[in-house]
Length: 349
Image 1 (cartoon, rainbow, N blue to C red):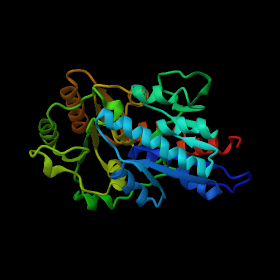
Image 2: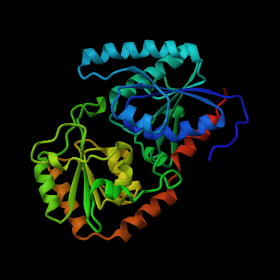
Image 3: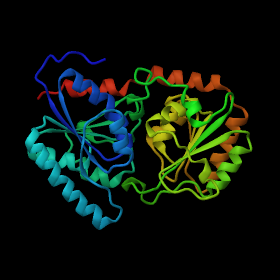
C-alpha cells in the first residue's frame, strides 16, 4: 500500500513499552521504511515485545527493562529519558512517537511529538505526556478533550493491524492449538494488573468458576495469561506463539477476559467479546452501544453477569449475527494504519 517517496525523507523515532504498541505501529513502520523514511524503534522491557519485533523482523534497541516498585520506576524513567536523548541527538528525528520519555525528549531536540491514546483512565501517563505532545490522536469515541492538538479519527488502534486490508486469518492455527474439527472453543484472558493504568483495577473473582461454567456449555476453554495460573486451570493455558493469537481469536466462538485490547481485537474480527473489569473504556463502550460486539461488565457482580452473558451467547450462537455486526463496523470505521501513515507523511519536516 505504500507509495514511492516524493519528498525529503523523514527520520522518525518510536518508543514501545507494551506488546499492543508493536501491533499498532508495525504496519506503519513497514510502509514508512518502504517509502524511504528512516524509522528508529526503541523499547522498554522485553519478553513478548521483543518476541513480536523479532518475528516481524523489525530492528530495535532496548533502552531499559521494566520494574514494579515506584522508586524503581522513577529511577528507570530517568535512565530511559537520558538514553533516548542521546540517541535522538545522534539521529536528529523530525518526528517522535509515543511514550513519556519520547514527548519530553522531543522538546529538547526540536522534533514534532505525536501521542496515540485510547485509554481514558491512564491518568499518570496523560499528565506526563499531554502538555508536551504536539498532536494527540484518539479514536472518535474517546471521552476526553485536549483542544486543538487532538485529532479524532473513526477507528480503533486494533484496526491498524486487524482491518481486512492488514489481516487474513489462517485456519492452520486450529491444528496448532489442538482444536478438533467442529469443536467449539472460547479464549479467556487474564491480566497481571501491573501496568500504570491498571492500578486499582480488578476483574474475575474465581477463575476456576469461570472455566467450569463455560465448559458446561460444551466448549473448550483456552486461557492466555500474563500471570501464573491456579493449579486448577493451569493445564488450559494456551501455548501457541504470541504473534498467532489473532488467528485463533478469529475462529473462536467467544472471547471473555480482563483485557480491553483483546476484547476489541475479538470484536473487530467478528468474535463476540465479554470484557470483565472494574474500569471502562470509551472504545469498548462504543463497541457495545453501537455494534453489539462487546459486552462490558464493571460492577461488583461483574463476574457472574459476564458469565451469564457468555453462556447466553454460546447457547444461542448464530454466526450470521456476529458477521453482520462486524460488516457494519468495517463500513463505518477506517484502516487505522493508512490514517496514521498519511498523517505522518503529510507533516512538514
